[in-house]
Image (cartoon, rainbow, N blue to C red; front, side):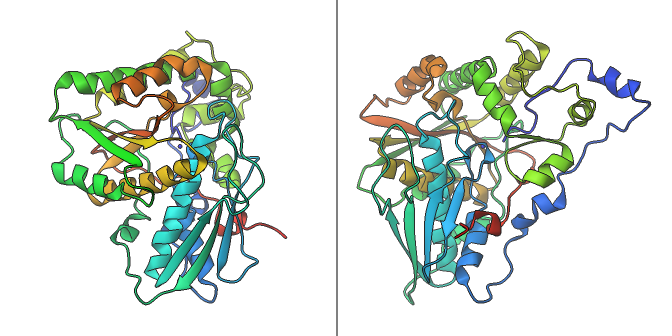
Length: 392
């Protein structure tokens, strides 16, 4: 999902000063990049576009927004994955991409209920992808059917308020029992009985339990920063400064004024990974460790099996959990690094499975996230509904 301060460079103040007093004031995310977070205009004619105006606000790994929809069939949405928007280095089997399609489908279902529509969702109507890769076949076919028995979902009210928050959390304020309960209930998405296990740890638990989560998260983050091909994958979708953010309206937003000016001066080379011991790396590790140390709670979702339908269902469950947390005023950030299946992460990958009693291959940790209270953040850019409609 995005990292707002992925890259900092020592001595940039001198570069800014050398330019003759250029402003170092923080830039704001351009309004057009986040206009979709005001919500779609009231439905006129085709309700599918109104529904999709909410679905595109779903969380997505690295904010890639790989959703493509075909609207040729009346009252139907056929969902595809944009195969140019994948993460082959850090998500080599596209597990996270499939979860991100699950979040999209769940917001379709929630928004449709608001209009008295039942969502008949058929996953992989032309067959499921294999375990190694995804292809051009559809992820799902959704038929929207008027149904007077459909009632609104209370989580709908949280869609425009849900944002991923990667900042420091309040380390002294525990996640209340009522919030944990609401998140656990929200995780009960469609699927066979017992397919998903929701768990959590917080300030009410022995401190060593929280510390084990923090240690694994820190180790996994440091590995990603010190794995050149992994960090370069993030650099490819990094949008530096207001102009790039407005042009792309996706990816990882970086508005740090110092880096923006270095980019303008040609001094920020995104084609090369910083060294393992460079300040750009060690400072990010230190910042992340500080944020992790402030975290008062972690949650996890463990599935039985890991087929493509399970991955999609896990995404549906996760976005419901985040919406439930939002309703309680909580912030949340997925910690996917330790769950990623590339070789350098083998240590944290095994450690988090062991900690959560999720033996492979019978069980899979589909989501692990930090939870707590934090000041509000700006939403992530979105590309608008039209950008996701398949051209025929």
